[in-house]
Length: 229
Image 1 (cartoon, rainbow, N blue to C red):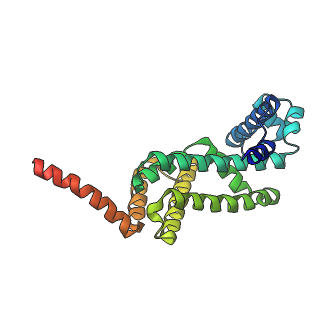
Image 2 (image 1 turned 90 degrees about the vertical axis):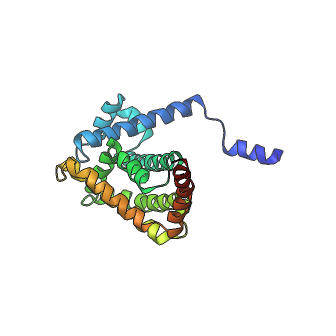
Image 3 (image 1 turned 135 degrees about the vertical axis):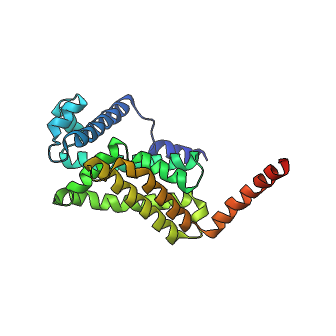
């Protein structure tokens, strides 16, 4: 046991003041990159602009990110991590029904981080260097997201294909709606009805056992109300 603890200590040393400061500076630069992507778009997001947004010199920025490619890669990774963290929080603090699932993800796509990611995704269509950075990260994120999702929503484990379809439908529709709102292609007044349609479709895709569990949980309460009446 002592040997195991010693090996862990050697592998994971306590963070130093310098390492903490370095991590904070990297986080500032990534946040600044996200802000720039939202404000001016990918084409106009340059390293001098990011440094200015972060309140740092370009030299200080290059100490942490040697070029724009490493900065963009770190930004994409951070955007993915934020989505995963938000997904975990929503699954842990809400009931696992279609309404709360849809509401939680819809909140995520309203945030600036989503706009920044969409800016990168659209730019990658014609920007070869950006596409080379994004593709493997997207595949990795999709695999992690799907694995986390099936673990966090065990009621769907009996129907993994249906769950994958429900997740894909939800993500594609809500991300498309959010993009439509940003570009003016979608009328805000249509949003509630579209989200309700999505909830109904996801509910219809749920495994029968999950629906039965909900019904059996509701039955005693209904009977109690009837007896009280």
